[in-house]
Image (cartoon, rainbow, N blue to C red; front, top):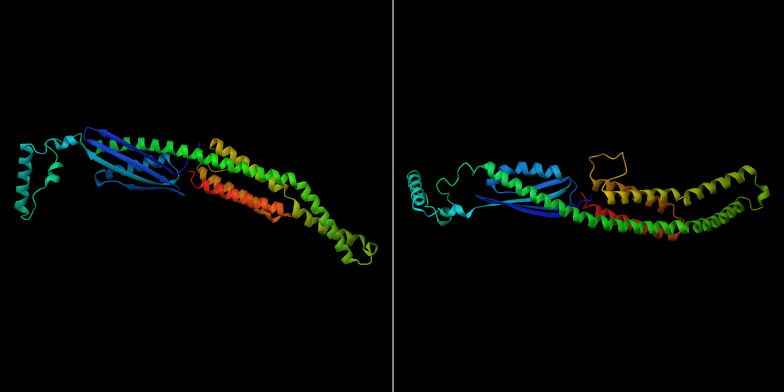
Amino acid sequence: MIHSMTAFGSARSEFLLGSVSVELKGVNSRYLDLAFRIPDELRHAETAIRELLSSHLKRGKLEVRVSFARSGSLQQHAFEDEQLTLINERYLAAKKIIPDLTAPGMSDLLHWPAPNEYDEDDSPAMWLNQCMQASRSALQELILARAREGQRLASAMLEAAEEMKKVIAVIEQRLPEILDEYRKKLAGKLTDSLKVACPGGFEQISGSELSARIAAESSLFSLRIDVAEELTRLAAHLQELSVILSTGKSESKSAAKTLSLGKRLDFLFQEMNREVNTLGSKSSSLEITQSVIDLKLLIEQLREQAQNIE
């Protein structure tokens, strides 16, 4: 399946002590680039999240935002007498050592844990577990969004490929006429060349000289107009493109298994462009030249779309 690198996914995991939110925002990139924005309290979860994302994604620049909020129940005990007494005792003990120590403010009291509030359940492992749950859900949403965007990209690329096939069909249809016109031009040019070489008539030209002239002009003729091979290879590349976009796999057995689909497409477009350039260099008519320009524009559109594919 085709996946785009541009997508967004988010999820939230809630439990008794609070909640963890994870947001994933991806854009295109040549390699997998993970940028984390995570609070220090959850920094211990970064490695596990990084491994999770790396095992499912191959390319793309991904911004990972992780945030958390403690449960409101943690604040219910903030103003109980026992809690305030404990806070005051700790403050007075610390003030003996640090005379200039400022008393805790309202914000500090609201976030101060109640007695036994943070027991063995409020451990780094518990928060790590919630981080991973949220990360897996966000990743699943991101992958689904990537797949939807990838299908839209594939449809646009298939439309461009169909336009290329139409252009190639026009060239193939007009090619016999173009070749016939070029043969007539070549015959006139050959006649003129022979007249220049022998103004007195062909009877003064030896057989070897005549053969050499004809061979030289025929060689030039074959180089200039033989575009059938380029058209055949270009059609084969378009067939390979259709297979890749339809199934998400390449027919080529020589490509490395670890090569991403986006890179395969990039290489394929390079080959297409090479064939079109050769077609342009052999062009003997203005019509083929215009068709070459159209093909190059369509290949560039394909290349731009493929930059977003993983």
